[in-house]
Amino acid sequence: MDGSLTYEILGAKFFGDLLANGFIRMSGTNQVFANPSSWANYCRSTIPSTSKDHKNYGSAWSIIRYLGKRLDSYKLRWYRKQKKQFTLGGTIINGQNCSVNTPTVIGSDRLYKLDKISAGDPEISILENNPNENIINFNSIDLNNKDFNLDDRTKIACVPFNSVFCLQPFLVTISTNVLLLIDFHSHLISTEVNGYLAGLWDPRTQHLTITQAFPLRCKSSKEFDSCTLKIKQNLVQKGLILVGWYHSHPRTAPHPSIADIKRQLKYQKQMLATKKDVRDYSPCVGLICSPFYSNNNNNNNNDDIKLTTLFQMFWVMPIFTMGNRNIGRPMQISYQIARDAFLTQDLLVEMRVLAAHFAVHQKFIKFNDTYNGESTSYWNKLQESLKTKLPRDLVEQQSQAVQNDIQQQALMHFWSFLKNLLLIST
Ligand SMILES: [Zn+2]
Image 1 (spheres, rainbow, N blue to C red):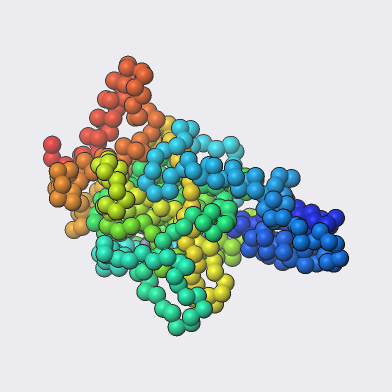
Image 2 (cartoon, rainbow, N blue to C red; image 1 turned 45 degrees about the vertical axis):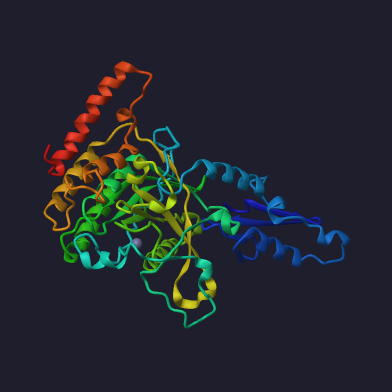
């Protein structure tokens, strides 16, 4: 938004634009600053230092205003909101339907390429499927050491924006139907799965809404182009834009590997390159889910939570000092979940097609088998995980007994539909 940021100090007033990646572009000079403090420092450096008050300028966050309001008020609001939101696994915090107020749709001409198809290619998923792996901290990487080389499989822990004193550059809402489909998809085989995320971007409110998942199901890499073309046509038809990608880490934590970070960074760059005007830019996010990762380390004794798939949404903050090494800091994207009103016909059809696609695969999960040597079967595990992502019409409401009966029946119907798809003997 042009000139939406203002900084007034010692009688001088500076204007800047807040860019979609959270950076600030100074009006007049077009210089770009990574954060409010660096912009404020620059502005101050242009003022003659004659005033005695010059040193008592206060924090940039408390002086710079966005649309007339101080930045730290946005920060505070963000932190409060973030506290309520979940980051890994978590619970649904939003009971609203996922429709948004007439968001602006900006073109559907983009569909970046996932580099490899992992579904059906066990070789690839072995790369990221080592349960004994170490997850390293980004700060432990020596950015100045040119010889420092990290294996593409190394995972780096995502950190929240407030840990690096930044605001998340955009808001994200994802609907339960999207999470339900991804959860279902990732449970079908013991190797990695991939797909795209589609939705809408409202540049006015900087709000990304993810309304649909498009699982990739190609039988071989030869089919890749025709698979993505079909998805692209489907997106255009629905008036959606591509807003991200997802993949699974079947048995490991949902932190991005170096390969994931490079991939995400590449997409972020593609988004910038394809848009002439920064106001047309829409962000993209990566989503990782870990269906069979037993999260024993978090001291959680609640079995239901242990059975629930962990999700992590991430975005990469580019690090410019790393030359062409193409890496950045993986940032945890905090998001809201909007509960859909019902399962759409599209979703049920997609589940049916997905199950049929993977049922013939040698890595297809045998849902009658016990999960992790415990008394639970893979089917029960899947059910527990999906229960948290059911739409409103299938969620029990204890206060309404009659409603409850109908819901129970509908839910039973849904479970038997899935059992049929997954070849579960009863
Ligand atoms: Zn990965």
